Image 1 (cartoon, rainbow, N blue to C red):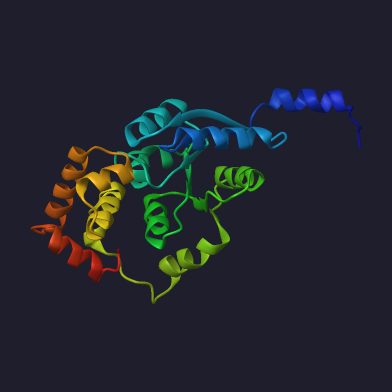
Image 2: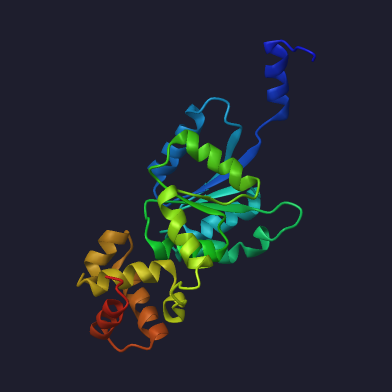
Length: 236
C-alpha cells in the first residue's frame, strides 16, 4: 500500500471539493445562520451551503438556480409550507441526471407534518434537536438516495406507509396547504385573526385570505363549522 503525506492528503481533499451541495430553506434567518455555523464547525464535513431561502417562492427559485444535492426544508414555511416547495420541485426531484433530494428539518414532530412531506417526495425527516454531526451524516445519506428519520419518527412513518391498519388518507385535509392547516388549527382554538397573524408572522389580511380559502375548500360556512370540523378530526 502506498503511503501519502498529510500535505498530499490535504491537497487531494481540496481538489475533490465539497461532496454535497446544500440549500437551506427556513423562514427564520437566525436558524439558517445557526445551521450554517454548525455545519462549518463539523471538521471536514464536505458540505457546502450554496443557497438559502425564507419562503416558498424564494425557495423554488433558489433550488432551480443552484441545483443542490440536498435541500434542508422546513415544514412550516410562508407561502404554502414545505409541501408546496416539494410540489413545485417535482421535476427536479425526478431528474435522472442530477436529482435534487429533500430532507425535512423541522421543530415539529407531528405525524401529519411528517407524512405530508414524505408523501410530497422528501427522502427523510429530522427534528431541529439533531446535532451538527448527525445532520451532516443525514445530508450524505439523503444525497446517496437513502431515507433518514429521527428515531422517534420512523415508527409511525412505517405504520402509515406499510401497515394494512394505517388510517386512510384524509382527502379533505389534503386539499389544504401547510399554511392553511396552521391557520385552521389556530382559528379552531379560538384565536382572533390578529392573534393568528402574530403567531404565524403574517398580516391580518393574509389570515383572512387563508381562512376564506379553507372555508371554500372544505365547503364550510363559518369559523364555528370550521371548529367542529377540526375537532372531529382531532386537529386542535
